[in-house]
Image (cartoon, rainbow, N blue to C red; front, side, top):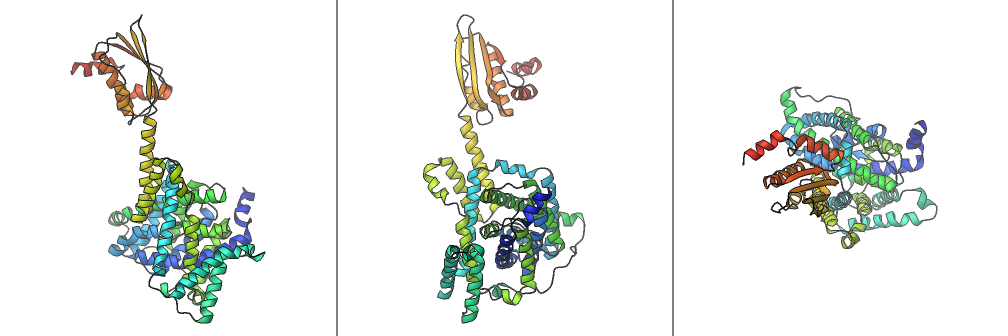
Length: 496
């Protein structure tokens, strides 16, 4: 345990320090932008990003993942801030944390097992597109200098790693930010800078509790928003953790991550910040810049606070073009380019799930809605596919006048009608055996179909026996079925 903790914190010190600096710089304009989206002062997003990053580095379940104020969460807060003000947002943030902790203890991470690979790929591609689209305002109605700086930034990002020795030591996004900032400052080029995004805070955050009535009416106001924030935050965080697991070929504790997100949001609300969650863009920057441990997440928060409070004059002159170049790199790196070639080779259902997830997410800018759409479609396609694997081998024993139906496959809501239609109710046989040795009954719809078939056969004057149920099928049939309960059968038969 001690060796694992030491490895997570101090196994990659140089890489974690340098990547944390890149992330901290990239967090500033995004935190300000998300604050503006939510309708609050920029310092609310900046304080939240600092607090969440620091706290999650200790209590989170995924090393090197960056959590902070995010656009997805900001969109949920808009109407709460507009209608009730900042104090209610802080209270909602704290309640969000408690809800996430509760969800973690009841095993919310298990929900990830229902998310198909196609949904994850769609989620990744949608985020890549949204990250790129978020940069377009910085590239619209600007001078040619911005395009030149952005192009130069991309050139440095992709070419600097090829420089012998030094190219492997320093992360190219950090080099890009430093070089372009010095170039713009030295030549006095008039382009949009971080300082133009909004006023940076000049004081440290302080602990405070929301100044609102602690009554049921307040709970009625904030609970719907807190619940939505909790779900969106956990969904984005757990999906991002899964993506980083793949990128780094390591595993993470999803339940610990869910609980950690809750703890971090409670601290954020108490320090005057808005609710946040994992950020796939910043997390990719961290990993691509060499970050691998908890130290990178912790220092990203610390560096962010130092930069905005004590070095705000230097941060303010960083050209937005430099950060746009970094985020375009993130967008390109995040997008799953293999999914494009997969459109020709993968099943249509898989592609539809992926494209639907992308389309809904990009159209609504709602990550939760996009993922839910993908999961529902994947479930429907799966149910439809499984239902086709249900059939019956039929045989007839002329000597004993017995017709045997050997059912093979899965019986559930989508295949129950097909199961019922298998039987020939008008056939002139005396005895019918339904053999379920190679079948499995999953739900009430399946049991109802069995009852319906048995009752129908008996009404036609046939002796029916059901054999071969496995333990699980027998349990649900015994509990909810009526075909072998004379008193229930009498009710049904007597009503016709």
